[in-house]
Amino acid sequence: MEKILIHKKHKKRRLIPIFPKIYWLVILFEFFERGSYYGMMSILAVYLTDQLTFSENQAGNVLGIIQPIVYFFPILAGAIADKLGYRRMLTIAFALLGVGYFLVSQSTEYTTIFVSLAVLAVGAGIFKPIISGTIARVTDKTNSTLGFGIFYWAINFGAFLFPLLIVPYLKSISWNYVFVASALFTGLLIIPTILFYREPIKETEKDKESILKTIFSIIKKIGSVLIDWRFILFIFIYSFFWILYFQMYGTVLWYVSIFVDATPLNNFVNGITGLNWRFDVEYVVVINAFTIILLQLIVSKIVERTPAIPTIITGFAIATLGMFLLSFSSGNIWVFICGLFVFAFGEMTAHPKYISYLGLIAPEDKKATYLGFGFLYGVFGSFIGSFLGSRLYSYLVSNPIIDFVRTRLEEQGNILQHNISLSEAVRIGESFGINRAEMLINGNPSGVWLIFSVFGLFAIFCLVLYVRFIAKK
Image (cartoon, rainbow, N blue to C red; front, side, top):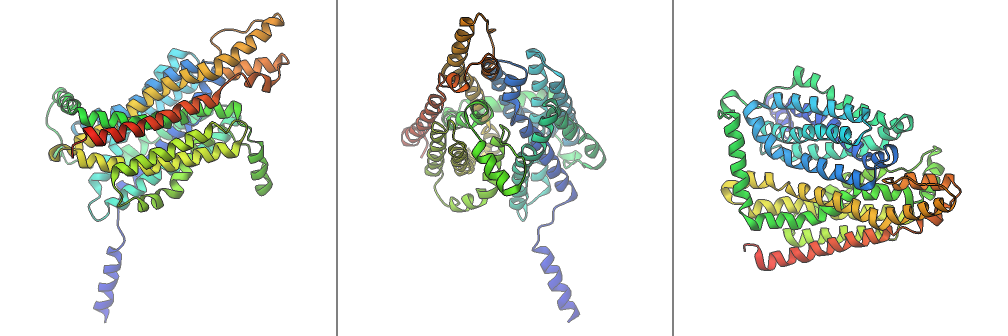
């Protein structure tokens, strides 16, 4: 009887996946790094225009360069880490992140802000493949699904918790404190990296090539992927959806800070909780992350056995509907939140199937390389989305309102400076007695969301044509 009980106890233990300590360490790293990053991104566009008084075009230039670095650099960093070691590259990443965030907190000039953000973007780009690579090396077929599931939850939990709790508190003291906190949360991770992180790559497994040869090999791989024009075209078409997505870190934040009256939501929440809570721009990221945390597992289960392309198209259609709803949200916080929720639902429907489809179309001997280059959607989407979004917003929203304010001030004998942000122009206009509603009616934010909705429809149309005439059967 004793032997039987011991056998059953042993069997029960094996039913529960066991992860090594290094796994939980990198999950902690992921939580703090992603929380710091999305905490910053939840306010960065508005910080650049409202606090540093950059124009929307200047802010769009910064976002259009910095975000592509975050998505492209992992392609290089992963291969270099295999040569130099994960621990060394992780230490470099945290040093760059800590220094970058701190420099942003101390910078006010356009050039220094740009350089500071570029430093932290390189750090984030190095960090990305190290964590996923570590998890891949310390898990196996019995626990990798759960292991990466926890990994993705850590990303979204950080993106949810930091903007929800930490950013509003620090911002109420000083906006700069958000960047200082991100510097501390990431820079201090060097300590547990040195003390507790153990290299998952054995010395015999490390790439013995020189760094120059490694870089040359990467360039060669890039060339082999770029000549596969069908693959690159598919990624480019898919990136049209991400042009819409990256508005959540630019135009949507500018829009909600000026045009959406959150008073009904504030009263509703405060009436239930008794708090003095106020909706602000950082909660845009919170809504997206919370929707994914709440529904991703359910949606993934529903679409588990559905064909990839029809599912991606369905996700595009749902997300496009969410963007379309924003065109009716001026002054209405409930419609605005509904639009964000629908958009996030479309995102979580399409994206997992995108990864799945890449695995299907990639050559058998180059799957890892193709999947790595699959992240080019973020390079294309963030680059085009940031530049295009800021220009559209300036042309349809900011410039007409600023021109109106400038004309009214000139009638009073006053002059409004050039290269000014919309929020600053509205603030100055109100200080000279110009009615806020009278100013805002000159802008056309609905036109911005309708144009991006057309981009979503265009992505669906191109994807249908691609599958019908171009994709390999």
